Image (cartoon, rainbow, N blue to C red; front, side):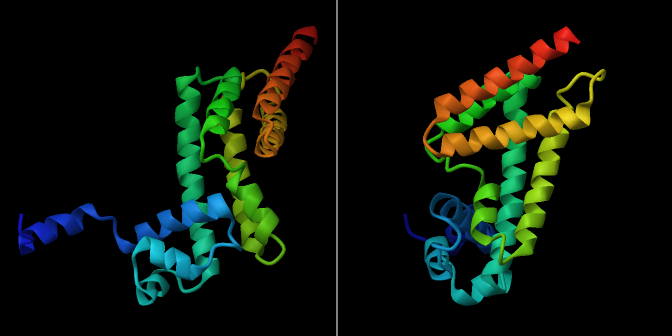
Length: 195
């Protein structure tokens, strides 16, 4: 079939806008290979944009890093909430949600913990984005808890346990991470029953 102007227009409509392609490419590379080890030239090449287009959307790599974290937050928290609903939308649902995430071949730990480790000392905004992400995670967990408990404190403790499980899974011990997380949740339920 010949490429006519109308076919080109249809093809252009199916291709994501340049900013979206840059962001998706950065997301994949930053998460898989790290922020410092991923250069802007590689992102430009893999996103299929020009340098001018890249810098029009992201004046610096730091701007892209912050956009990446915002993008990652949106897609991850949405996935997390959907997965919780799939597994029962309660505290016990967290373990199978984590197990699903850890089993994904693209799993490389928490993008925010990774970014903080790489960039936190040179970019305070990364720490700010990480705190915002973790605060929203605690809010989601808070919504899973019964009304008759210290929801804020318990949500913080569960969020910390999730971070620990994620780090352990990233070390290459996902089964142990899930087992430990389940034991902690069951232990909390046991202690609650005794009080």
